[in-house]
Image 1 (cartoon, rainbow, N blue to C red):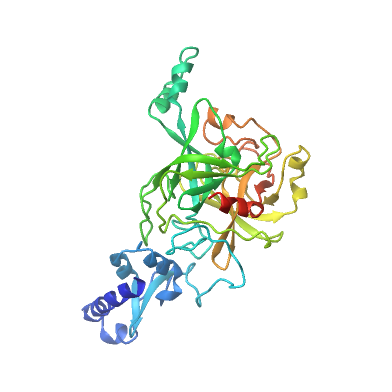
Image 2 (cartoon, rainbow, N blue to C red; image 1 turned 180 degrees about the vertical axis):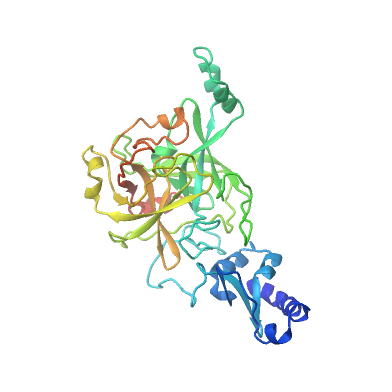
Length: 397
């Protein structure tokens, strides 16, 4: 599809460049190049992997592609590519690294992102999903008999408002991985209901940037939950669960499955990983409108000693200059290798513990346990080591 589109566009592009009266033949058709904006570079199209990926997935219109064209060399098209995205030569994964692709359609591979840089923009992390909890209408009927209910609370309940208090990661077309604490969360006012796929900006649908528009977000009702048989709610050990969806996810540029590293491969201490979600970071006052990402370094588990001393399970420990402080439960901790993303899962932070149902009784932004977002103290974050559960995940997906 990509090559066919280029062949169809080439006569149009070259004709427009050479026939345009505003340009002279010796400055355009001979040099075969037009100037690009200062933050972009004119390169052959295969050296701009984000654009190639969009074309492969039919996510880039011919109109937008023509706007990006800056020149050609015989039948070889050049486009304006972001200086943060273009590559000097095509990079391919290490063929000696085994990965577990999840059960996918043959058209897509796991762990793919159309953005080949560390910037967070539309399409950077298409693996991340939002987990929704819907207001319980039965609660309001019961509660009104005994106490006064605020107008806003009543409105939220009667309209079936959905709060996205947790996150997860796409395993395959019908499965999302998250923590058991999220999947089994209980509240009088809210109950687990759905998964939102393809979100980036919470105020726009579809999301667009200067290159392409993503597909509209899709909401998927949850059919049932599969929790790990060894999950312990007191110690948070084996804190993983699978959400099985009623309808299949359609994979697009903004909705992709993640990769799993085999159990005999390890990411070493000191490695930098990325946490992705829509919650607040330490020091932020307001809930962000767009997806956020932050870099954390894997550190020895002893640095999470506050958790260990309280008999809490710590499988991985990580810290950075900034920490997530609310609505990040279930968010994936991603490790990038040769342009493929692999997975860990975030599930708690801080040395202070609060009852989990506070997350639903109060406003979105209160974690199951953790320090206040106004805290000036940076605590390390504890994670589920997903590698330990790869076999169980794939067998139950």
